[in-house]
Amino acid sequence: MLKFDYTNTSAMSSYTDIELINNEPIHNFELHVDGHRAFVDYLKKNDKYYLIHTEVPQELEGKGIASALVEKVFEYIEQHNSKIVPLCVYVQSFLKRHTEWNRVVA
Image (cartoon, rainbow, N blue to C red; front, side, top):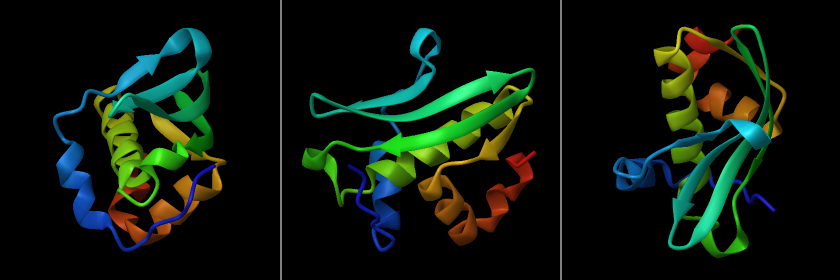
C-alpha cells in the first residue's frame, strides 16, 4: 500500500533515468525500480486520463517513488496533449503541493 511521504521531494531527481512505461493493455503507467513495480492505474476516454490509484510496493516506500511516478505521468500526459482527471487521493495531494501541474487537469 502507498505511504505518503511529503518530505522526500528531492528524491524525484534520482529517478529521471528510469523510463515510464504506459502499459495500455492493463491501463497502468509503471516504473520498475530495484526489481519492483510501482504504478498508477488509469482509465482513458478520448484525451482524458482518469487517474484512479497509485501504488508503490512496501519495499520502495519513503524513497520518493510515488512523487517521481506521478510527475512522469504528468509529463507524459502533457507531451501527448491530453489532460487528467485526478480521482486518486495521492494524485490530488500531489497537485496541492505542486500547483504548477494544474495545467494538466481537465
